[in-house]
Length: 290
Image 1 (cartoon, helix red, strand yellow):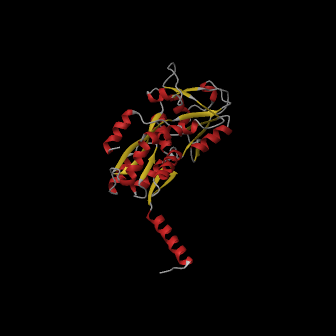
Image 2 (image 1 turned 120 degrees about the horizontal axis):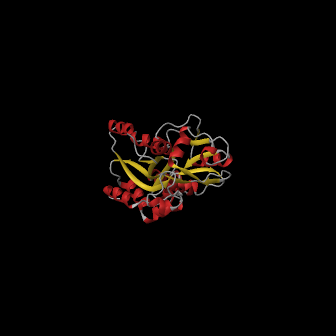
Image 3 (image 1 turned 30 degrees about the horizontal axis):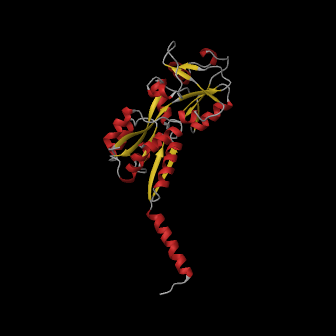
């Protein structure tokens, strides 16, 4: 039986559409700190697995966790641990959040390159962001007011710094920005500015200086880009970076996370400026067969 060329083209088009429709889609949402990293991981994974589609979007850790709880995404990226209120909401919705560590971060405090301040203590960072230290002269800098740049409240980084460093409320005068890149650009343009961003962004940011941080005066100050110091626990504002799933990961979700945790995936982590997973978190991931 013979068919017209138009008919054969139509059949070919239908086949392409059917193939596209059958491609599996994994939705990943959440942390803006690791959005570039996870997008890169997804890009490489999809190149190696043409039948899989992975969509990675940001919006903040809180947004991602909420989407996972509401079963609107398979993976929630988060730069902080899930909180009690979110766990309660998950239980109510029949969701069992499981936490996997995919990378390690040294949260970096940045200032304008014209700022002579090179070192702060962890407590000074907290006092600055609480609004108690208002002028750079109070920490060895020039006589000029400190302008604060930070994230919105749905950001995991906002919550992490508040819990681990501020141990109180942010100053009402802090300028809230949409992401790490916006904070870096704002500090670059402001001689009085200070900001906090993930180390993967800090390493790539131009026009800003990365401060060394110590626990208290008299102790050695440590840079967040000193990998051995970070991995040994000497840098005082380091954190794991998470992905949350409902229950134990399975199928394509598990396969993608396994790729992120593989030697190839961890190489991408380092290329994006973050750090590979320390041994203690590898042990924790192992309970899911990862």
